[in-house]
Image 1 (cartoon, rainbow, N blue to C red):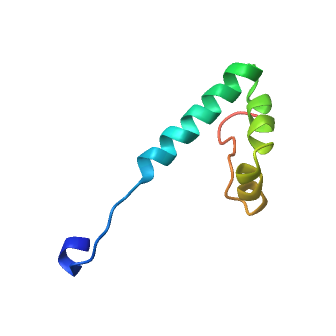
Image 2 (tube, rainbow, N blue to C red):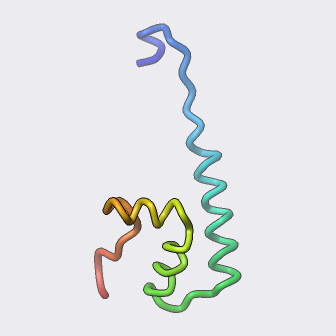
Length: 65
């Protein structure tokens, strides 16, 4: 679409994905959660996840308890 409209456009989503992966991998390696509830608690300690949860856009468990 950018080419059709003749406007410069570039997506830089992958670096953000890789950074998030590194941060969460390090967190889970350090804290070693055993239960999904522990994973959810860890995620909700991160401000961006907590803010997302406040508007019902955060992480949620869709199967199980």
